[in-house]
Image 1 (cartoon, rainbow, N blue to C red):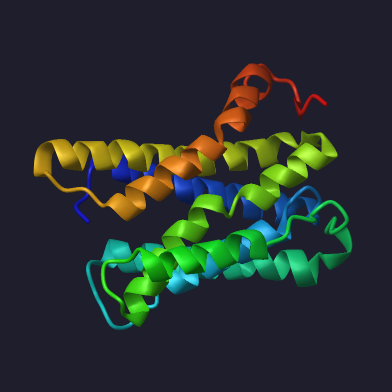
Image 2: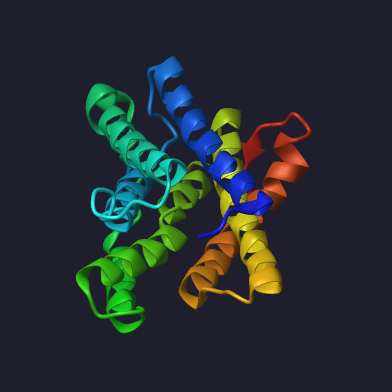
Length: 214
């Protein structure tokens, strides 16, 4: 994938989201308000997407990002389920992961660019990433609120995919290239953030706590 300003901004937003999440958990010594199920699925996303880490070299930047996303997601899961397990609110993290993992796998088997293990794994990671945030959004809705730093994390994560959509538009305009699987999943993922973006701009940006009205 060629580098564009939008892709770079998207990658930086993605890294910022990861750092905000780790900072929140580590400094507060708490996983409260964080969906472990969303983080488990993100871990699945990065592992299945970057299976080619040791078999295919594109650039130092590309490899560095792959290592960062895999290691950070594993570290996040460890902090939630092991180091700060006592603070994890499993009672509110009740979204059924199989409701999105199984459809993502079935769709990957049907819609891929080649019926090979690596291509199916890549397609699965793209489809799963589009909906992996659902447990976190469901948890925010169930509890009715989110800490500001958690809101900033979600905003940075949503912005990453929105910026990638601009990257795809830019690439299509200047290079005539587009990836229907990534674009379709990216649009779905961005749409899922719609209500959150509205609450973020109308409440958090104004210095108020993000609260979901019943």
